[in-house]
Image (cartoon, rainbow over all chains, first blue to last red; front, side, top):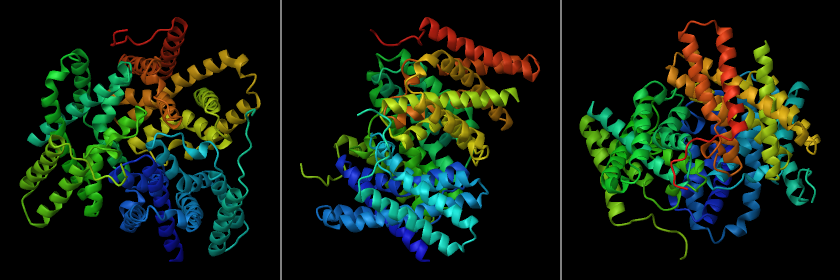
Length: 201
Length: 201
Length: 201
């Protein structure tokens, strides 16, 4: 129940981050809504399509659609004040990252897939909405270039399976996995860490 | 039967609009064919994939493939005269918009999905072929920036359900929905209407 | 068995070609891995999604994932010496083109699809990984503009069905189809052949 609430809050925060980028591209309200939608549920949708879980998730639970609609209205109306909410939004977004990773891993497990594939599905759920958003905005996806975003999800997924094999109860696995994703993300942003470059400066 | 004929005509017109854009990008014949294909059936294909109706539509009905092939040959051969056919092409394209919207809504209903999702599927069927086309051509999708194209589909989808709940027979629902989509599109283009901007000029 | 080995070799070579392009775009290691992955299995993944064969192929056979991982490490470590291996890599890549075409055609046949659709699936398997790669790298797909790459697959697919209707045993069909794809590709690159242009210079 708390988990579901966090999922919706994460969806809301992801959608807002989509709105902000769509507005930078000066899209019209329809375009803004689609970018918000894709940012929020694109990763999970791609995951569902690849494993054959169709109709995809948001088609059977309108709460995701409502959360995204609310996020679009909220951020268009308050667009001049969003800057003041930056810290809260960043926090919600980071919570979403943790929750979406866990959901993706669980969906993989429910299909009896190899842990490696489950971790990939968790990472995809949490970070590929942003990839589709960037493609629709005609940009090279930012997570391919500099942000350690997916790395937090991958390490979270590994944590999940380590704890699972260690025999921890599900609740604790969820909490520690989410905390792992969230704290890596916070540390990375705080200290501006990037993946090591393989290029000469 | 008439409906199927209109569907094929719409496919033909959508494919031609794809050819025109692919030629602007100076693609080779293979690229032109793929862009025509994606413009014509990309929206329906995305819809089928998201709801799990596979193999996707055109794989089981080659008439779509033939219509697209014919459109490609037709528009490459007559490429210097297409300008004179502009009005007819625009009309066919608009008919396609109406027909594809109805098909998308019906597919959603056949999967017992919520009306809101059915309207989204109708809009997707009719307008996301153009989104995929624009992505393949390395452009920000035009319907996210200025064209009221999707809006016509959304209003058409709403009309569909209003008439359905009002108890109208299917034939009439189809006719009025298509007329709604087509007339909004015509009015919008005639009077150059755009979605209200949220940006300062 | 030999066929499976060639499939893995092709995957390895496709992945390397992805790495090279991701490095040109100065992506970080995560981005490089994703581009390598998509180049290697993107075409087959798209095919599986469109025909509803899910979970998609690589989720059930980790050897593809390992081959791609090995290709990424191999080409990052040896990035200054890859130029010397150009001929071998080109050959492996071309073998992959032939093998992937055959796999795609066979998958289509296993779903009882029309030969025309099977040939399309073969072409998609072999050449659409590169299309997705180019989209993620924010380029118009190169095979839409100048490379006769897909054409080799299409002619290979036609060869497949001609030989099948002629009653040849499967082994021979595979060998001749692969040879057809490979030799067209070699001839095309050797003589710098392009599809005829429809534009005035």
